[in-house]
Image (cartoon, rainbow, N blue to C red; front, side, top):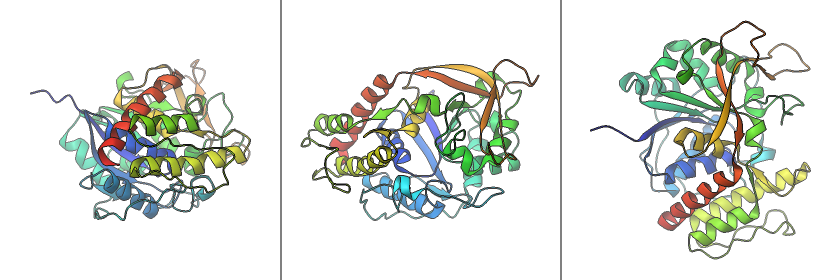
Length: 344
């Protein structure tokens, strides 16, 4: 019998928006998370692993393997961003102590064992720096052909950066890894090229307090009001554990965005990438050859896309150029409210 599941390998740096993306994936029928590997980025890799284990515990999915990968970028010191995601990476959310343990396997081994056992069946989804993927490609150059496909959240093309004037966070944390990954895909068949969710489309996914309340009400929970006039650090009063987790995490993220004059919203970059991976988000794309600046102090970490063939190099990426934020939030509310009804 044909297997119609969407089988995913995740590599993440959880992270508030990574957490929302993981909750969405856990709630989506027909989606199989084969394993979750952890890289340093928003917070350190050990904390990333703890966050993933705790989210799995919250949702009754403690059997999914969680493995550590590299705890530092390939060539530069690690920089994390607790001011964006909180000391533990999940804002104000308080998660259950996980019963699960970090796998004894390294992230690279997890990825390579999975794709070698199931060639052409598993899609990779990377929502953090590309360190682990670069290491996996060094160990197995045929990885792109062994994967069914790859979705990457990262980069900024013809759009301001969110870390420097030109660089997006994930790429800036480990630009050398990103450069290696894109180089490895140059000239491969179209269907194998990574689908890239960059800031010009992910920053359109602006979560508001109304979206959080919609999740709560669709779940049958009490209204969940995130009032911009509340004192910073106000906690959810919901008796639904999933709703409280989402609300407390996103409140922190909204406070951060407001601090930087972006409004009381939260950009859910990784949620959109997750929906691209499951096929639940519509989008338009363009072929490009992507490279990453690793030398210039001024533009370090910038992703550059040649869409006109000026470099005379083969394409290595499919960059998403258009999406539908309203449709993304319709799916989010439906999936997360289902999860909250089941596990709240």
